[in-house]
Length: 484
Image 1: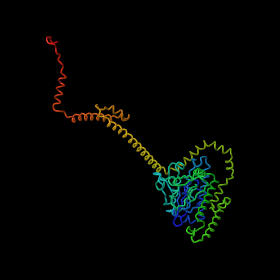
Image 2: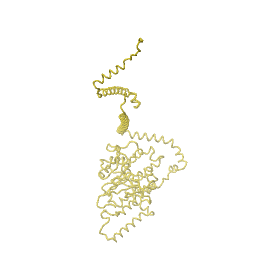
Image 3: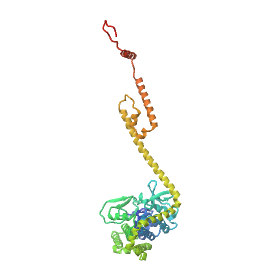
Image 4: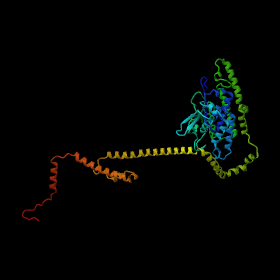
């Protein structure tokens, strides 16, 4: 339930090409509850939701914004690989659409009120930008919020000297945890304004703060977020957003009220209040009936209504008729291995020429990133090597301490057998081991010489005994026989 005694925020989730759903919701809020938009303390958005939040906060034409989404999806569907085709530059298209749609002084009316969710490349943290010095900075913030790595390019754009990527990577629904935030998402789940799928599955998937119910319809929506569906599907999604917005306003008693404090007056008698709510529910349900869906489009902005109607009508010119013929489509598919390299070379050349003004800054950034990555890998290698070698040496020391003192000092060959080959072949290490053997030999001799106390006459007795034992024994001859 929307709190009536405090300020409120509006937050739009990132959803790729499903942003046409946000256009329907924003059109409903602006048409039936303009106070929600005018008195909102903050309007947040991430990725495609940031585009709708910008259009809603700046007062831009929502019909023009919805027409741009349909035109971009049509342009992507014309190509063999869709948005992944080398000639499809999504960043350039978004920038040109914002330049054409937003007013010149748009940054002045959104400072401190519009919040755009970004993901900082250096540490992956979420950043919400709400201060803009010019229209170009506002457009650049939207470009950063919609930049999906690899999908949109390899080098992320920068905002005020800092590199950012898609805000949906770190926070796809800003400030969703606050009770006074009206959350909008094209995926059915726990958001305030979202599709109400008739699924009995209670499992829920939460992706960067976005609640997504686990069902087949949401899986289909996820598959169409980066690869646009047909124009008819986009038209139905926009109408679905408009209906869900009406449902939210009806559920909270905010339809056609100038102020939310007057939505539920406490002094109205019980039976009168029930009659008013029932009449209001009947009137809104008439709008929500499937056979009255065309009547809902009458409340859309004229440009959006026109774009939705044109999206469902294929042009009838000669070139379109020929290109839709089966033999032409088969020939086009068979020529893809030959035309795709040529188109890739042309688009690469165009992008390279457009990239020339930003080459020094991007090259400097790539060098810094490469250096930091190499430094990180070297530190990891040193840490692993340092943890491995001391453990091996400590095991050798503990083993030698547990053994009894050897009667003969160990030689360098014995030590070298326990060492790796690269340490065994080191000459400086061999010299050090040789000196260590000599020092050990001297220490052992000094130990035995200083710690053993001999009696005063033990040496003389041992010497005499040894001397007598060392003299040759004189043979005794029988008496009367001459010696030999």
